Length: 395
Ligand SMILES: Nc1ncnc2c1ncn2[C@@H]1O[C@H](COP(=O)(O)OP(=O)(O)O)[C@@H](O)[C@H]1O
Ligand SMILES: [Mg+2]
Image 1 (tube, rainbow, N blue to C red):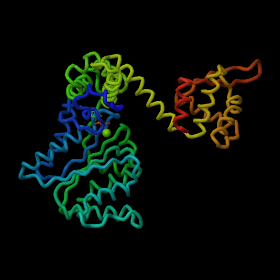
Image 2 (image 1 turned 180 degrees about the vertical axis):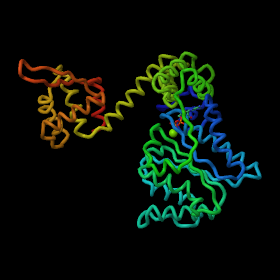
Image 3 (image 1 turned 90 degrees about the vertical axis):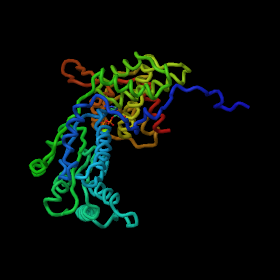
Image 4 (image 1 turned 30 degrees about the horizontal axis):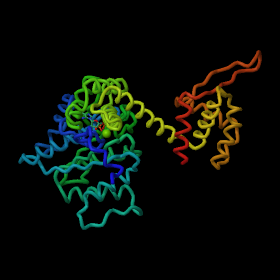
């Protein structure tokens, strides 16, 4: 008997992994300038000298992580072949959502000998963790490059950037040499550092600018050729995905996502080639996915208020004033077994936040001669989509 999968025989994808987030491209395209700067900043390592510290800046999806991985691999290979270079050890940590203690502890655990027990989670402090880190570094010796990705998310980053780069000059290290590579999505990161760190941290800066449509097209072409079967994509689909992403911050991650989702749409429709139309649908799906995440990020009560306005809108009862929102909101909150916020002021604060975040539209109204002013609200989104998302979140 034919099972549910038996008729799925063809696929548009020859190698879908190359469109995954975790895929590391062998070739980095359109980043010659950045690679040149990176090469120069890293060259001390080839001669057994203290590495420079390096900071990379640029918005999300501009290739900072991909270029760094590429450079680290290339440097490791080169060092192997060179006598003058010390042994090279590369340590990567993503700082997002981590405290400095966790970051240093993670590094220590990566460095400890295999049979050693790991650094305790409790009982010791960040200073102890640094002490252990230095001991391990000196035990191993050689050159150590620390890649701190999303370093702008680290709370006690001042301590890290004051301690680690100066460990050798402060005689915490004698055998090992260390260099820091920090990756930041935020251009103002340096400004936020303490004066002490700003004065002592000598670093090379490499900044990544947004890709334009032509550059994105080159990157996509390379991926499409490997991801899809022959004649599985058409040129204008690539043009479209590149143009959309170029307009929206020049983000290569987004461009690749559009291509992957576009391929999935085409495959689901049994089409033999990815076209503009599939990319257009992919754009809607990707946007919808993003909206769902943004709604999910709101507090429960903000979501109840959004849901309230969506319900009012479905009945044709918008725009509404905050007082009317409050009455209906109380029912909505109760329907989710939550006691509602009681003051009108707190409802108004949520409404104004939701307006600022682009979920709501707001009109100012005047009430008669001396009635003063008030606001009326309505959704700036599709009400059905909001209700559907709310169901999904609560379900
Ligand atoms: N110049 C490039 N050549 C090839 N692929 C790239 C390039 N720049 C970015 N990518 C790809 O785009 C996606 C996002 O890049 P990533 O390095 O993660 O960005 P960032 O770290 O700046 O947020 C990854 O899948 C990466 O492989
Ligand atoms: Mg990154």
